[in-house]
Image 1 (tube, rainbow, N blue to C red):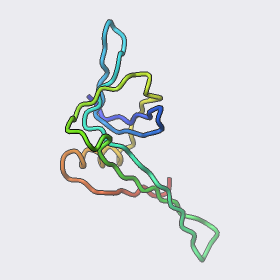
Image 2: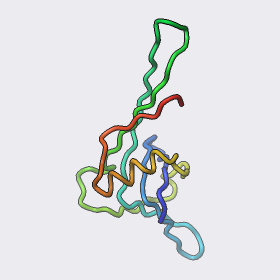
Image 3: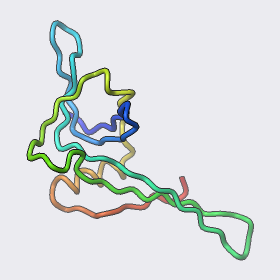
Length: 111
């Protein structure tokens, strides 16, 4: 399994240890382990001295289906729009969260 970001048809961005479920040499689904929803919010800061702006992106993660004890959740392939590799800082944030060393929010500057 490897950590991936999945964009779902619902518009949610989910980060998870992800494994393909294969039957008859076809992907019939995906198994998300410890899935977390990724929420981002951008902030723009104006400075008095110049016309330039600074942009920050605040990222938070929380369990995807908060009311379940399950840590492995199967997903139908027709619900996934795309699967991509997360940037290093997001992967590290996720790994810290699922391993118990969590930070509630991270900031990515100058995106």
